Length: 158
Image 1 (cartoon, helix red, strand yellow):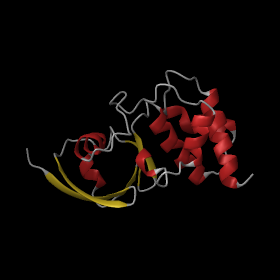
Image 2 (tube, helix red, strand yellow):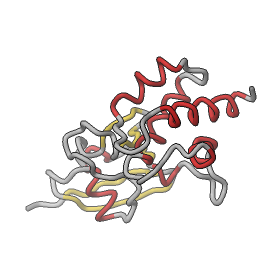
Image 3 (cartoon, rainbow, N blue to C red):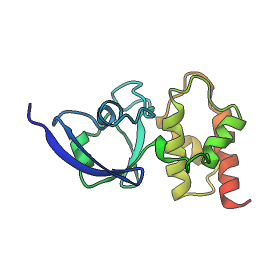
């Protein structure tokens, strides 16, 4: 099968890779580039474990082709922390015990960050609606909602 040459920016760094026309962005990230934060939970876009942003838009990377990343700006969970300094969302997830097995956590963090970039002060209802595409089988959602709200407050300086 013919391979396509893709040039993209991931987490602020330039990347080039070859991929087949039917290869998902999730597979490229994990298998070609070693960025294993996004997880495959379902492969059908129903669980959100593979959430990333492409040009600022939240997407399930299992539903995007790797070739579609050509010329795009992709952000993954690996791009959230600033070196050794965790993003406020990451810190509040840890401090608030808002994670257990960790399969859903990267996708939820990416989705929550995308929301807070659009709306820095979401209501619980808005937050639950925004995160409805991210399924967690372990924690329930109350600790997740509290952690995101605490991080949002910190980020607003409240």
